[in-house]
Image 1 (cartoon, one colour):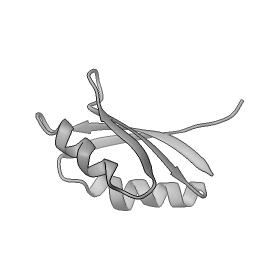
Image 2 (cartoon, one colour):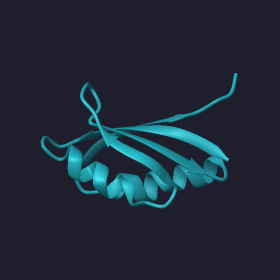
Image 3 (cartoon, helix red, strand yellow):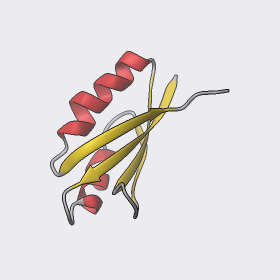
Length: 77
């Protein structure tokens, strides 16, 4: 299982709606609107890196109001 944090920038005033919609996507464990350089932080999981990439590109990035994402896979050091 691969876990990642997805940092999301949204259009002005869209953070809460974006977080709510992303929270309903299978594979997303949490989606919270936050303050700072990013508007929403998402925690997601998938069986492998390829499926994680598909989740981000085909599901998360298609949510209305998103302008940019940055995916940060979790590693165990």
